[in-house]
Amino acid sequence: MKKIFYTLIFLFVTFSSSFSNDIIHIVDGSKDAKIKLIVYESLTCPSCANFHKDVYPELKKEFIDTGIINIEFRNFPLDLAALNASKLAHCKNDGNSNILHYLYLNQKSWAKGNNILEVNNNLKKIIENSKFEIEFEKCLNNKKIEDFVLEERINGHKKYKIEGTPTLIINEEKFDKTINFKNIKKIIEKMI
Image (tube, rainbow, N blue to C red; front, top):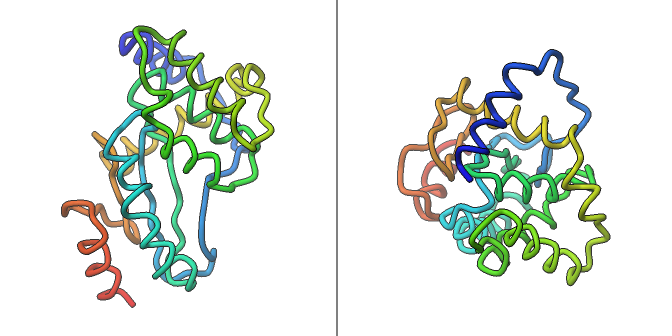
């Protein structure tokens, strides 16, 4: 599965001439917030799911909802399953993070299987059982969204030297401590 994924990235880089940026980023918080937090993540990454389950709710309560932080979730898919899930997260193209959080909170239900067809079937089931009105096949086959997701991954590696997920960038500086609420809070409080 990884060979297929890296082949897709190679083909995208090789044949992509002009990337159309009409897909919008998934963002929470005030655009005028003093602190900009970018999270590079892969939807099949268990540590990323833990971030959404354990760290994000505290960040939202203390810093996002109060207007201190603007958080932007960027794609860094590590495999084909994560790429497909990312396409679903962006499918409504409304910038809202609800689908993204739903996919992370249900990661154990869909990110499993012996091949990509099994994973896609699992993804389809949880999307069909959700409140989100998403046309699964249409989203999965959306080339613009796929290009957007792959471009974010490539740009993350070029600009910030992203190697793994999750990786946090706080006001253009890579966060190099263990990712937990306590460590992030310390940095944020110094910036306020």
